[in-house]
Image (cartoon, rainbow over all chains, first blue to last red; front, side, top):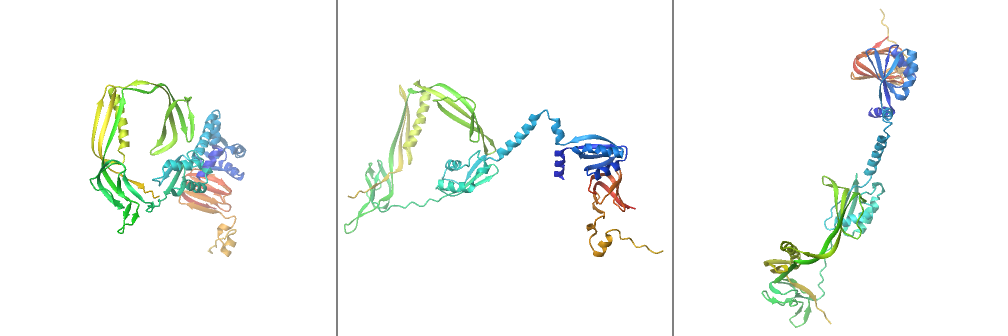
Length: 388
Length: 94
């Protein structure tokens, strides 16, 4: 019935009333002529009924024959709506455009989600899939899922399984990573373990070979720690791949000095440009600054946790020229601290600090931070035995 | 007084003898009543009388009168009438 109502609305219908004369005869004439009337009811002395807009004029003949007077009460449906808003054709165009826009937008991939990976980064998977067509803004109808899955798997050897599921505007990529085969230890190549750094041995654990040092021994870089050559009881030399853990107490130093007057690049001019981002399209709202240093920041529209492929990118173009800058003590200290922590992180990688001593000094022309550390670290380094 | 045997009208004779449902025979009026809210009458030749409390239909041999309240002829096409409203009674009028 709902469909019938919609069809009637689309074709347009009028509600009319009939008075005087023989209304029953009027109804019979209409029925005999095949004119469809509906919702016919008597209210007082008047008969009300509905008829399709195009058929109303045919009723005049039957009204005349039955001696009734007809009058239109209401007009409903799309033809009347179009007539009413004929002067505002933009509305219709807008509506059609809206429908087309919704249709096109809903046939695109809006969001690409990747699930099931822990070692292979999302960016690598997304990069391969976007080359195969699964990317934001891609038309769903043009994707050959089976072929994409096959080619994506061959493009990312770290994956054992990959599935592309298109659900509405969401492309969900489910992957399973391959379990790496255990590394085969090469026990045939003879080698020694030597010290990679000066220090005092605090733990010596030999897995293969013969210990060349004792706990508490002081060693310098290059000293033999575990010997890969052993002798049998009869004096026959035997070659091993020496293995073991050697932990030593070592000392490290880190120094950073920032002069108050330093050469640097000074900002001479800058320019900001905004661009609209829609899927993989970018619509710049200004002119870019060529040959300039630049950085950009993109803000995407979000709905809850879902990031939509629509946003605004802000690009900042800047021109720097070489020059000298004079730092205050605080500025120099801040720069020194920042630089010092970089150096410290690099110097103390793989060690465990047991004691440290830091000092900050302000000279006449610089700020200096220095640190001394006592650390525990593994100093065993494998070195092949070359046999001629 | 001799009791008159009810006359088996029209196709009813054949239908009765062959035990065919009467609905299969042309020319018979077929009435379906849905509770007291809607009645569908097939085989209506014309409308005899139409008010908001009573609608009388010509079905050939007999007239059918539907009485009730706020009666509406939902459709009247191809000898089929659909009447909506609060139906109180349905009578056959000779």
